Image (cartoon, rainbow, N blue to C red):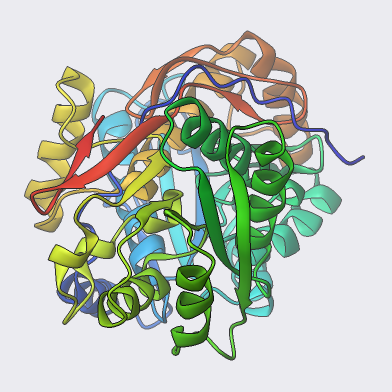
Amino acid sequence: MKKALSLLLVGAMTLSLAACGNSSKDSAATDSSTTEESTTTEAADTESEGNGGAAFKIGGIGPITGGTAIYGTAVQNGIQIAVDEINAAGGINGYQIEYNFQDDEGDSEKAINAYNTLKDWGMQVLVGTVTSAPCIAVSEETHKDNMFQITPSGTAVECVQYDNAYRMCFSDPTQGTESAKYIGENGLATKVAVIYDSSDVYSTGIYEAFAAEAANQPFEIVSVEAFTADSKTDFSVQVQKSKEAGADLLFMPFYYTEASLVLAECNKQGYEPVFFGCDGMDGILGVENFDVSLAEGLTFLAPFVAKSDDEMVQNFVSKYEADYGETPNQFAADAYDSVYVVKAAIEAAGATPDMSVSDLCDAMVGAMPSVTYDGVTGKSITWTADGEPSKAPLVVQVVNGEYTEL
């Protein structure tokens, strides 16, 4: 059964797609993975005390190598911190967590292989996958197996199309709609140009929702230019057409790597619009050999900002920086919260690790309507029956070379 979107967003504000994007981290993640491309908690091979050796087995899937490794590595690390905290505090219903993360390189077929590897390991709950296309593919498998799945960052509508699947992040349509509202309500532009990746479900989904909402806002879309995965290194034509159309704002619903190239091209052509994006911008300040001054003033929606004064956020940021030597981005934060949501659902259901995967899933799904969660990506978060979270977005802007919450 396909689920309808019902995400309720309050106002606009945003993020910490903070500097979790440097290449040294990517290489560190690769070096730290095992020969089987998996990681486990220190307790993964240790039986929980007083429960007959049983433990909840939580799996994770995402890219820790390849072009989107910054996202998968952040998710892997965010899960690890949550698992360590929960185990140290006594586990879930008195049972410890075993954790295993598998690399999918951002590829759907490899994500299926990773899922099967985790099934052979004994996975009972999946936190993943990280990117939308692999998540959609794996959701077909979790649906067949009736396994509880929560994706930290899979934004495509289809990622949570089945009753066993939930998400922690905002959906693509929600990001597009709320971006258009924010631009219009704050008078950021009268003429808007859009550049988007027509080969990517994430980018396309956001653009389509943005265009639909733009009809209700006091600005005009004057230029729409697309690129694909096979043509994402030269943006001279797209930028030129945006400039010639007189657009005073450039909407970029795609990832930070391509965004850095677009900003560089705009600088080359002397084009200085307002730059506005979505959560895929997280990491742009860490792009190797990128002049971060070109991103000054870039604004985007996101669920987390590392510089928040919130005590829970600061505790998480401190632990992440101590463990991994860099500031966590929203992917790490959503992953961290996802594990605590799993914990809340299991505890609300009174579930135990000796239950079958399907019975555990049914119990958790039955408990989700009663879960209200306060985390690092939002407070009083609840979930609708279609798996969508209800929480307020943040608006982030690059100011003096740092992500700053507006």
